[in-house]
Image 1 (tube, rainbow, N blue to C red):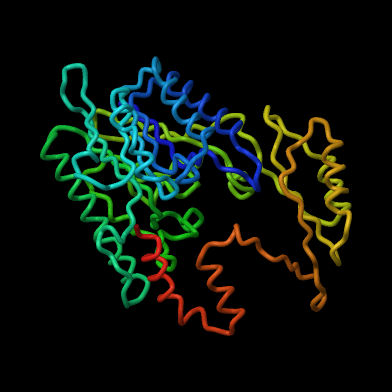
Image 2 (image 1 turned 90 degrees about the vertical axis):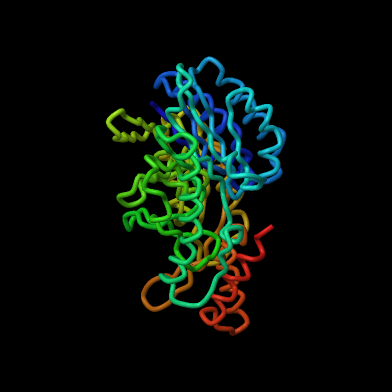
Length: 400
């Protein structure tokens, strides 16, 4: 049986106010073709379908048109779960209607656990596969409260209710369908990967580094994860992140965008192949002095049909009027013309023998704990002394 795992679409997302609708339309068109070409039977979308809990009409239109276009692809089932960016109730609202089209939606964990089970029947009516459709679940809902102890102790304590939750679902699926293979989803940050792939941001607690990979029941043959926007396997487990299908920022633009093709084989083995999404738009950043920026812009080239999105950071000794206009004229003179989405100036101050870059971060680019750390610094307070209390407060604040 073939599954295709994707996540973190973030329909409706923008880059510094610039729409990404064309990028998403390109991805969804390619995805429908890939499902046909690879004869995929189950499509899994592991959360963050939308970028906002109140998505625009355009973003919702992309989503529903894509689901409508899946007719004729040969798919037997689509499984969609909510992420932390999604509104669980909004995603769940049309689930009865979508269920008639073979789309199983679980926006949140309200209601019975039964609805998290998505059985897939073969032509003889037997259930070959059960997908445990687990959406984003805040640890608060599972009874976890941040307490004392070191980071490792707290991480293990936070993992315990998640481990019990996955075990409970696995037990329920095994009782209902004892001969079926089990696959699960999840939308969370999980540690246990190679150091260069380990998530830099944590679940929602802020200082624990993520959930332990031991939370997943050993009966699960594949765990389709979302939330981290890079594609990688979590350590030596059978849990995988598919990554986001479009580059949502400059950092994500440095690596290929992928989905995961998963084959569950009769001998019990699982093969995972990452399919690179062709033609994805580049998100580029040009940095340096004005002459360096000019040279870099004149040397830009790309092979994709969509022109890259471009951010320019000019390094100056002092802030200068007219820099933005000069950069804009340069970019507008290029043929073909990239899409300019941001221009900034970075002031360099001399310290010792070399320049030290001094650039104020934008509030939109900071995580809540970073904002709190800057506030502590400004007020002369110790961030380390208040960090644990703030983490607990943050966990309570985001709970419904």
